[in-house]
Image 1 (cartoon, helix red, strand yellow):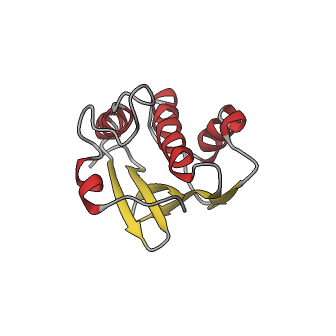
Image 2 (cartoon, rainbow, N blue to C red):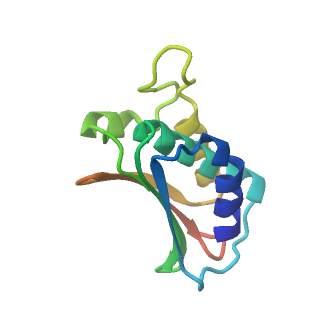
Length: 144
């Protein structure tokens, strides 16, 4: 899992400004899972891209992976402006966006949710003080 996250960070390196600190926290015990790596890389790309947009050039981007209760858990967190509970409720709706005209399609999180669903996983948003976290849970055995 860490390998896919790291390759996504390399691919997006040109979009990470000097004012953004990337914090990596990967557990060494994360097993390989039955998944389509290219599809999951699209999820990581969408989540990291959204986090970078929220950071607006400064702050911390946190990328982590671990095992929890039979699932692989990936978290993408940012210390950007934050997200209102109302925005969080609609974030996975098709065509919902907080970006201005021409800055996004509103499909990134909807597509990410569909990919995670196909992998029998869950995706959600946790609003923490000072950090917005998108969490993906994927079953290690591919079943749920």
